[in-house]
Image 1 (cartoon, one colour):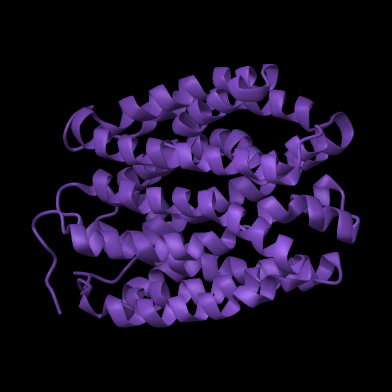
Image 2: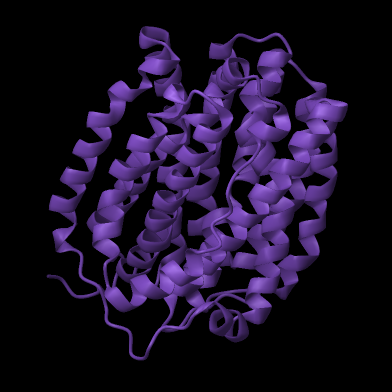
Length: 382
């Protein structure tokens, strides 16, 4: 068992990022297949946007802090989430699909609450860089996931997605074997629960909440409905999902640069630039087509998806002895904001069309900028 390194432990960070990558390939199956699922089950956009916010994340985080089961939960995440996501093509009704996604949401929470705590422990003083590795892995997975999903469905049909289940289970077995080298620090005092975390980090979490809500309008709407939007505009399913893959790939580049750069120039500066740049790019995306639209989409991915590692670094830097509980609260806020706002976007899409809904999303995204200044200055620069 290893002790927490004083410097950036690249091998351990890459291993934990790999767990995130494998896991999120499977959870990325829903968005690219949503047009087919909507047709199969006769769903409205409002129904298709229904997600279950993970309000149990902070309590799960407190339990993980006490039990020190981070490695177990990271290892089982891909197997649990992957198996469930491979069953979405077999869902005979909306209610069954909702149950599958609800259960998958618990598995998603387990990994996303546990893994960043381990990343924080093995990143030394370069927490932003560690979070960049972690989030890059997620964005790359959401680049690969749509392509994998569409290819498997082209071979076996929507119902044949279950054939990927052995890959998910095998990944968990491999991760459990490899994660044995990661040690967990014992907390110096009992971890806090939700209200204790909120009291301790009220200013930080207020700022983070405002940014998460404003970000969810664009990031949630695009990563969920982009294939549906482009498919409805007359593009092929392949072209629509290649566009989603490009968005996520660009987001991976943005996440890598933003977290690492924020270690040097400050978290707030990076967040302010990203939040200010994204809405104009969204308007430009809606006004272009062809190759130019793909260029704008890539720039949008770089800016829009670059905020996550920076905010995670802010939360964990201010968490003290309660990293998993604080991280669980962060993910609860993010998932809750995304779940509620996607319902709003879905309702707007049903009544006004997705193009108009996207214009509204770009407008709302600007509202996150004032919340940046509620965040504390980072340990390096402002």
